[in-house]
Length: 195
Image 1 (tube, rainbow, N blue to C red):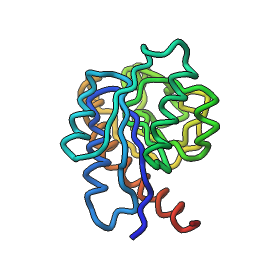
Image 2 (image 1 turned 90 degrees about the vertical axis):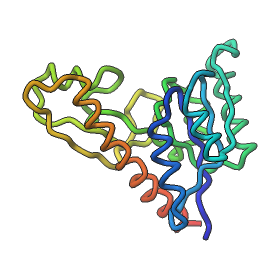
Image 3 (image 1 turned 45 degrees about the vertical axis):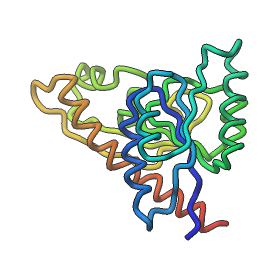
């Protein structure tokens, strides 16, 4: 069975990476993770990749004189590993147009809000402060503007009375771990059908 070769970009613990790893373990899942890159040497997601015997690499943005040089290094590494599609999984860098254009419609991200609401950081606090009744997460295509690409799928949770940020974040994260593999499966099937 032909599988779409996925590269994953991470900055931290990699819990969404783990959800994707677990999904790809299913022989019928239409994608396989072939390479993981972290921009942070302390990212626990690298250990997750190693435990799953997935090729991984640390490419720190601090080692490059400008953003495009960093982006070029990531692009080169993914292409060298035969990556066909990229998933951001808690990747905390904004990439340049150089990178985004080279991977047009082949990069997705999961964001902890119901986009277009609450782009950027502190989404759970912002949803609570606004008095929202619903919150959630979105999988979307990556564009040059932050959290701005077309939405692929969303999942909702209720904001409960007296919710803390931590409680809400925990419930949203559960939905992220379900939604991201679903969205990748949907997209991978669509891409593979055109090949």
